Length: 79
Image (cartoon, rainbow, N blue to C red; front, top):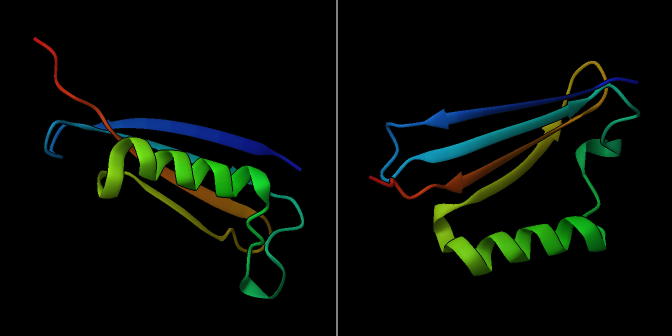
C-alpha cells in the first residue's frame, strides 16, 4: 500500500491551525469502525490535554480501501 502525508496551515482559524492529513491504501477500516488501540488513544488524550477542544482528531474510510486520519492543532501567532 501507499501512505500520503499532507500538512496545511489555516490562517483563517483564530490563532491559526495546523491541519495534518495521513492517508493509506491498505486494508482499511473493517465494518466502518476503526479500533483505537493504545497508540491512537494516547494521541487523542494528549491532544485533548494540551489543546482542549481547539484540536481535533478524526478517522474515516479512504474508499475504495484504506484509512484517512485528520489532525488539527492550534498554532499561536508569533510576532
